[in-house]
Image 1 (spheres, rainbow, N blue to C red):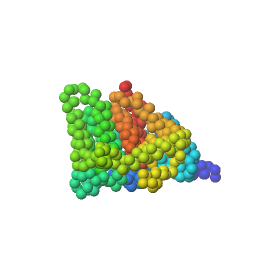
Image 2 (image 1 turned 90 degrees about the horizontal axis):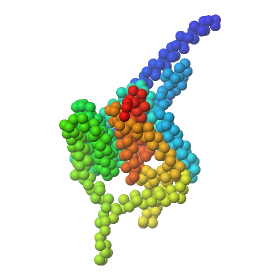
Image 3 (image 1 turned 90 degrees about the vertical axis):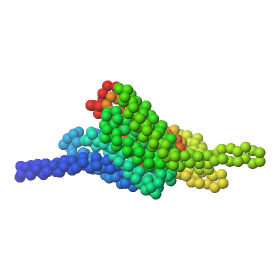
Image 4 (image 1 turned 45 degrees about the horizontal axis):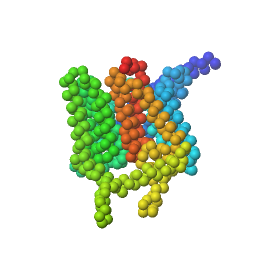
Length: 439
């Protein structure tokens, strides 16, 4: 009887393991599909990106559960983890912000706000297993973002009545989000165009030139001031980084005129069809009474933003160590005597200081500087893919800094999806043993 049970249980166990591995094989196909969909729709659809990301969360949960159930050899099927230094930075961020959330006047609201901030930070644990199974997949991401920009251009052009006009087009993302996403992806398309030129891939060069023109069309309709300033500045950094790749033969330097002219079209066109008014409206002329001279002052909307910065800094000075807590609103006193409730101070760094104090600000720095410290030594890598992704990661971080000086963009999901996918891809490229080539 015992022998019969043994012979009966072994095939059953084998069948369960076969089904387990078949399910894992299907998951290997689902993961890259969802990540590709996230990159594609994240350029133009807030709802689409959030839906796909929630499915990725479910996929990752199943993946990790299946790995835990595979008790025979967990070290074989266990999904790889991101670098330890990055995980330490994430842990420091989570712990410091947890302390700040609990120290505030509304700890329950603070915990909800912290969960919202941590939600996009699950991405590295989802992306890393995909890259380990599909090492070629990071190279596909830039094409998917390029296709997404083409769709974004079509949507914004339609929203503008098929005219070149500055109307703060949304493309189903929201005004601020679309401008910030264009600020992230325009430098990435410039770098991808330079990469394709440097390795002599003509079709890729044409595709990324088209994607860059499409991004310029979307920017023309959206005319975000932050992007009109930040995108050219970061793109020039990409030109500087890739310049040495065109030094082999003198005639190759003329090839760089292709991305230069394309970028000029992308940035100048929005200014010529109404984007310049966005800057001119920042200031207004105020005539003095009697013999007093006229003066140029900030418009009311810009004065309001400066007042929010001052309020955030004042709040930080009142709560310098732990801030006033997460999940609470600011009461801003207007010049009219009324009080307006605002959710943030329109400044990433002042907002972090006001909500979490110096402790949370250190956690914020640890979150971003830990992965950057791993990428920095590879900024001169001879491997083209590693070079591209390292500079792409530097670009999205610089965009976060520049955009964050005038707005609160940290934690906005559609923006952070792109940010952390790029960071994960860059770290994956630098951590692969076969990619660690001499500098």
